[in-house]
Length: 461
Image 1 (tube, helix red, strand yellow):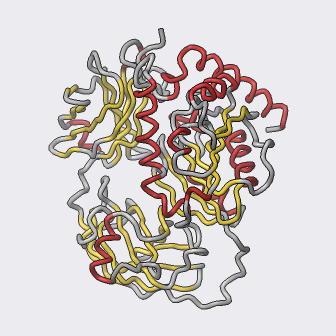
Image 2 (cartoon, rainbow, N blue to C red):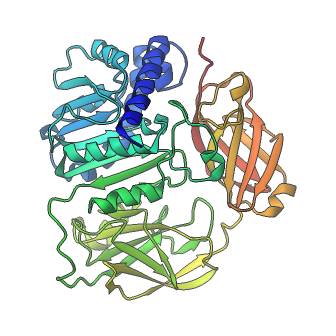
Image 3 (cartoon, helix red, strand yellow):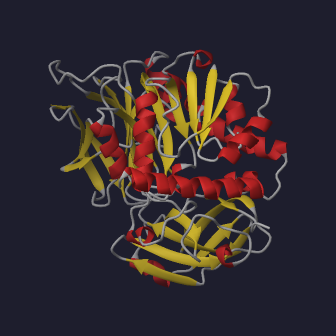
């Protein structure tokens, strides 16, 4: 795609988001309900900042004082998250393709002295010099960009203005299935920027790919670190060693389910380099299967408290590696080892993989059944939802299926198996009167999926 095409798409993005901002900026940013109060709108932003930033603050700041750091928020909208970010970081810049969003954000954040708001082109950040920011985040923005090339253009320029040692955390729609590819893209249902594209972006820049969570879903979250130095090869011998392992969601559990939401293994190693090793340089082997991890980094989650009981409070020598379990791993004990830099392999440990979770369904994506978009409304044609379910076998077509939405249960009015992807597609009408953030789970036979949260908006008036 050439630059004139970029400019044309950017013009459409500006036009559409300016119009949405004039209609009801808060609803289009967070479809809780129309005409949200300041407290409601800011409250949803506070929750997002707590989940996306504060929960990983040590990782994102490299344990530095955030009050000494500068942060860029790509797609700040009307400042839903910006106000809360300004209370954490020393300097915050919020940018948006929509001038009307920036105007409204300016009114809402008047008097917040450490915030700067700027309308940008939608394809780059030319207003900023190289290496301007310690941390760059983007939440629920690129999923609305209709072109992979324009997403890539934004990420490339974000990389330019990120300081060495800085972190880039962003969210994309990473659905790679053909059904989604066939949907016409616009400034609401944008293009997919997949795991393959993310890994390629990191590789081309010799970046440290810390994590990719939610690959092949609507909400894929990526964290990448800009290295402070160029990699010099494997001249120093590294000897990784697995010192602890467990089920990702229960550190003391030593058997790992093969499928479903629980099919995840976490390994704790010595001999890896926090500044060097990442989701590209590290490979996990289960028997003869080689698996790229979805997280490589400092100890976190429930493993921190468990490991402190074993090794004390200083865990700086350890690295946490997390993988999902591939479909072709069979039940039973398998040797597991870790390869670093395509050269150094840890001694293998034996891990028990169980088929107890083989029937557990997993909700892969939620969309409206009208046009396959992500906007789900409380009434009208977009109030019929479509779900793609993983870990569903052929027998699922003949089993009882129900969908629990909030406190109500509905029965799908259609179901079909997509054998090429091992997915079950089901659709159902939303119960009347639901809107806002709602939890949903699916039951197939006797097995329930883990709950997922999605937004139900009201039709624009």
